[in-house]
Length: 169
Image (tube, rainbow, N blue to C red):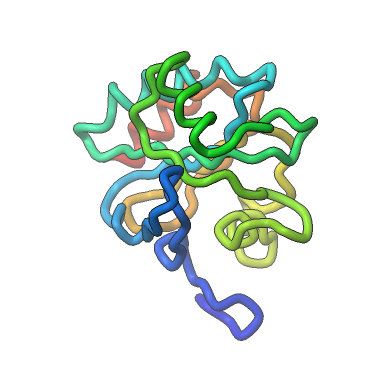
């Protein structure tokens, strides 16, 4: 439910720039299951790109879309430009899922989507500050937040795959 304090009521209300700089509304993914992940190229969790791409390939034909949001909020682990990030992801991990432009996922300059995702008053089960790179939010086909997985939970873990399977049903 949108409020005066927060004009968005769900993830579909947001439009952010793709890594190529074009505005892409999340509403374009209505009816899909989404896994939203803040990513970084120089992090101990960076190898999770391989797991993310693997589950994307496994489930994309059933309606899963992974959306990567590069962020430099933690230890300067995403220092590159959008072009450098895209090249790194493509060449190193063969990433084919959509990437958005580098933005902030915490602090005063937090992007609007992550302000929504982390707002405890709107999302009591999944809200709270992002603590590190590769935090994952699972969104159902209806746009509702289903689950949050912290960085130490691998994207291809049994826990994440079970949640994805359930959401895809």
